[in-house]
Length: 482
Ligand code: BGP
Image (cartoon, rainbow, N blue to C red; front, side, top):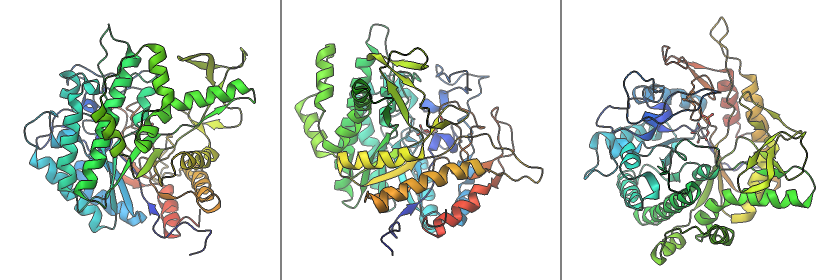
């Protein structure tokens, strides 16, 4: 192996999440998850969380792409592509339908036994997220979500059951998907579905989110420690959404604004990786008069449960400025009245306005490695786009290939030039999933197309896109032939 190559052990995969692909929302004893009460949305209309499952409402996640019944044939396609790992999640409500049940649901446990066996048999290492935006609806409705400390115990018990059950099948785990997203105020989907926080009218939403987030981080740390007791070979990681925030100008105030906005994200990975609540957050709580409930035992748990690696998604970068310039369109940041997020003139954006910035991936890999000195795992990266079928039923998704190629190039530079240890790369939505943000099917990410539209019509037929053949070659050459 040349020094200029990726390591032989590098994991090439694809990523999805249970609720975005499985369907079978009420089969084999499964309970209702928060994803099952999310309506469809669009560019202009936000998804809503309804009060239980209502009749006559279309819920895109109920059937999703029916992976639950197609997984064996889907895995054959993934094998043909050459994947050496596959990232998905366990749907908590298949195991504990209500989250607070006395016993786990054996049929749900069996499903994941079969799925993991099938992956292993076909040469793919499962990479498993414990909670990917889908806590049991009952834990939201009855307990108020993760602002309630009881959720810590429910999560730990769920993790205990699945980590013991799959201890010889799964080595790579992630605790909460994109745990930091709830800190970005503009995302309201009940303050993000990982923590699924019900904020009462008399509560301060920001304080509640900090409480819920800390509770999740405590739960995560407990699970890391527990997992290592169950199997010392487990690799248990954080899962962050890293959207690096650049200063728009060389104005020193823009540098500080960029650091401050990033701290909202680093709050999560700092606790995951260093086991301590960062000083900048303690200062913020003090300044705002927030009372966040935690005790010494929990602080000890944070210290004892630091992660083995940092998993993260990377889709785009953002840019912040403090310049008083009306020609710069942007949206304000609640905490920094003089700063706003603005367009970066040096990068283009997708149809959904996501800024395309491959170099930003190298920037993230370097800055995060410098901060934590831990191995990194790119567990999501991808390009949501409209795909067109030709008359021959082919999909020429050269735009997706361009996006992925450019990002893999930058990842390679980070590894071979900068020496950043990267475990693997799992592009998002390798088989077209339901979009999380909009509930659309037609915001597609996959290298395998699924015949299903935004209203749930279609045959569910799978088709290989042009990117399928491209990625096959990338994997076969360990990233040399892009
Ligand atoms: C991440 C999530 C995924 C996924 C992806 C793309 O935030 O972890 O679940 O959906 O982004 O987002 P979207 O589906 O909204 O395009």
